[in-house]
Image (tube, rainbow, N blue to C red):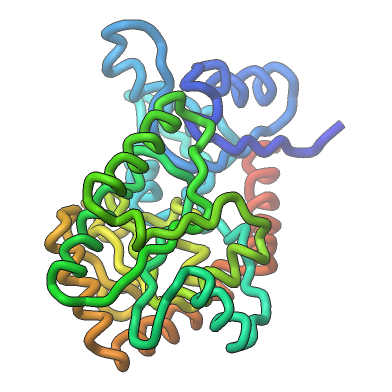
Length: 320
């Protein structure tokens, strides 16, 4: 018999089905199993047509019926802190624990970096812009392509390396999106300037992250610590250009301009941000070093310790 059940909630991972919303109530209140929840996002499930407000209430119900909840970024933490229903005074414990990176840095010699750069055809003075992550509509890969086209037209000698780049499985539109991106590469005349690594093991991803000059990650909904590709780039100490989040708390404790560069989700704005980093080696070095200093914050040992403390609080709350 477990002392605690820990649910990892992400709406798309459950196919937007509402069943997960009832797990804490069923297991906790009826079965005597306290259920903690990590909210990887706060997207509501699908209930029925025109459910509207009921869908949003379902997320609040999942939190309030749990023995405790984890937010993976500061913006979600604030939203959960505001959850409440009339007449409901109790509030389960709430913690901020970031996700870790599934891609840890592997030692990579300069000779290995040189080999990878030659593999993509990069000559002396050429710069490699990397994009990493599963291919889906929220990643803004079309903005990466448009920004690269602007850089090339402006005289910058850049090549794009799409690291991984396979379509995500949680949304059936991902394959269509990947096909659209392939067509965009051709339409923009980037075929000879784009290198696709294809699926790679974690150590291969790590080496490519270290081989590119910067990562361009323009999430359409804004950067957030819920994004594993962003966390991977940071723990590798890479300069990152990404999109400005609607709520800056989504990046806390990161500081724009210190740990990464943010811009609007527009091709020219992103291209200008990339130019800023490429033209200033000192800035690129400072961004990488500041990101590397946060590696312990995203480290699995620290995350495990935070969870152990959180579980103790949840068990005390559940016993109450």
